[in-house]
Image (cartoon, rainbow, N blue to C red):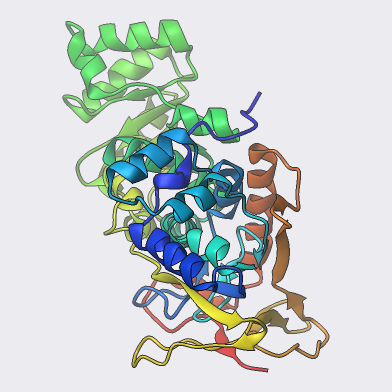
Length: 433
C-alpha cells in the first residue's frame, strides 16, 4: 500500500535565512500581519522550449503540514545566531493559516503564468518562499524535460533510472515528476513506496562479470526472474550475448538491453539476429545517456523501450525553470517590482486558456482583473489550500495519478508547433485580457 505521507525530514530548516530575518523585522515594526498575496511565475522558459510543466505541487502540499519549528529546529536557529526571542516565540507557534491557489499539477505553463498564488499574513507567506521555489523549480524542470522525451518516444515506454546521478531525495522527486508526464516506470524503489510509481530493474554489467561466463550469469537471472526478464547482452560481444541469451532463456526471452555503442545500428542488427533465432517477440531496451534528441534519433530503429537517467536528472538535460516568488498585493493594493529585466506585474492574477472549436489551445490569458469568459476557455487557477488545510484529501499516490491524467489532457490540446523538439517560441502567447 503506498505511503500516506512523506518520510523526509521536517522541512522547516530547508529555507533561506533571509526569510527569517524578514519575519523578525516585520514582527518588530508591526507589518508581519499585513494581508499579502505572493505569486510564483517564470518570466521566461528555458531557451527554445515551447512550454513548461507544473510539477511538485503535490509534494509541496505534503510538506506544508510538516513545516514546523519544534525544539530541535529552534535550538539550531539559536546556534546559528538567530536569537531574537520574539521571532523564536512566533516560530514556535507557526502554522500556515492562509490560502493557496494555483495551476493544477501536470498543467502546462508559459511566461507569466501564475502557477502558484499564496494569500496569507506577510510573515506566513514569505516563510514559504524557499520551500515553494525549491520544490516547484526542481520538479517542473524534470517534468518539462521528461515530457519532451515522452513525446519523442511516440508511445514507446520510457523508464526513469537516474537515481545514481543525483541526491537521494531528488531521485525520488525526479521519478515522481517523470511518471507524472508519462514515463512508464522507475528504477527507484522509494518512489514506488511513496507514490505508487511502477518499479522495474534487472541487472548491471557487474552481475555478468561476477560469473565465470556470460551464460552462467544469464542462467542465474532467468532462474530467479523467469524467461520474461531482460538480459544485458553487451558486456562482451553483442552478437554472442544475444545468442547466449536466447540459448539460455529460449525464444520466450522477454527482452535484451543495449547500453553502449552505436545504438541505432546495434538495435537494427539485434532485431534481425533475434528474429533469426526465433525470438521474434523479445523486446529491445536501450539505455546510455539518452535525451529527447537521442530518442528521436532512434525512432526508425526497432527499439521497444528507452531507459533515461543522467540527461533527465542533471542540469544539462533539465535546465532550471527560473520560477520566482514575488509579492504582488498588500492589503488589497497591487504592488510590483520595477527593476529593469526583473519587473513584475502587481495584483493577484486570473488566468484562462483559450481553445479553438476543435479543442486546440490558442492562447494563455493572464490578467489582474477578472477575465470575461468565452466559449472554449478553461480556468487555470484552482483552489489548493484553504485556511491552511489542503482542499483535497487524495493520498500522494492518488494525487499523482490525477496529475498524470491532467497532464495528458493538457498536452493533447497543444497546437502542432508545441510538439516540436527544435528551438522556438512558446507554443502559446501569454496575453492580457
